[in-house]
Length: 112
View 1: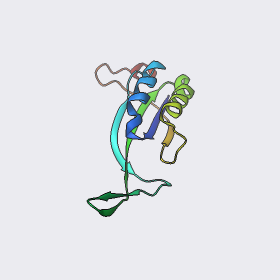
View 2: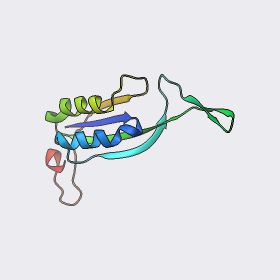
View 3: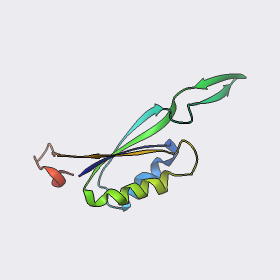
């Protein structure tokens, strides 16, 4: 099993969610996060004054999937979240050693 974390632009969430459901992802978790990468934040002008925004708002998507879906999920997120511009985000892939459905006690891929 794999645990995939994707950090994407907020405007891309609906497209990514819909596309992930289409490739067989049965559930996901999202969080509103902020941070910076190579773009190091940006500046905005508010009422004539310039302000430095050090942390850029992003969405974190977390998905637990069987190994067989890894490449489909990665390709889908890259296609839907990508614009070939700086700040598109990142994908992190972790090995998932176990999962347990609390209600039934099912373990492993059956719990996904």
